[in-house]
Image (cartoon, rainbow, N blue to C red; front, side):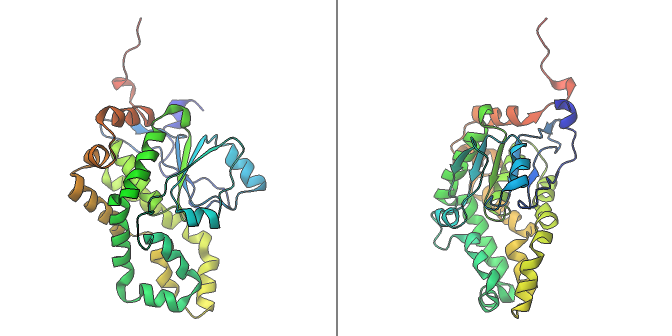
Length: 282
């Protein structure tokens, strides 16, 4: 398949590797001015601790050169990634400065119905995630982590690249959202991509829901932990606009990535329609 045909692949393409649910290519979305986000360049997923056998071979065929791990050190030590030989791993601890490690800590409730009720019942989950998503945008550790991530993926030689956290929805969701917004993807399409986690991850976690029910818990309490809600991402967007004014302000003033470097990201990760491409020299 040639590059132009590849860039016409339907956005939100799921890649079926059973041990890596919520794995997809973030390319294919239309950008302002008639362009499109390149496919085969950036992937998002859950943690990679279960890769092996045929799944590892399938993963290797994606040609990924660099993996950006957005998890905390404790998460990485507990569930270390398994990756093909020769792939570079870059650790970008988004929640290092968070007292409770935000969304990452909520995974603990998956096996404890009483703790889940105490932590998430009565509408508490929305407040917890709103706080966590504001931290993802504004914590010093988050700004440092995402600066390293975006500086890395701007380099052609480090792509194709994959980024992930634990479930591939919160820290990973913001990395994808900020990338797509900078590239000129509409906010509606960014919210659509964010919501695909509910399509791709929740079915794979059905056994966890059943175990939680068998232990006496209400499975509905787990949806905020393992699924996504547009309200969470909208909270992050509000934090970005409140603190930095725009996605360009977030990159420039929050991450310290200047306009030239922002344009390098756009140039590397988008393809323009033929009518807008620079004319070749005779």
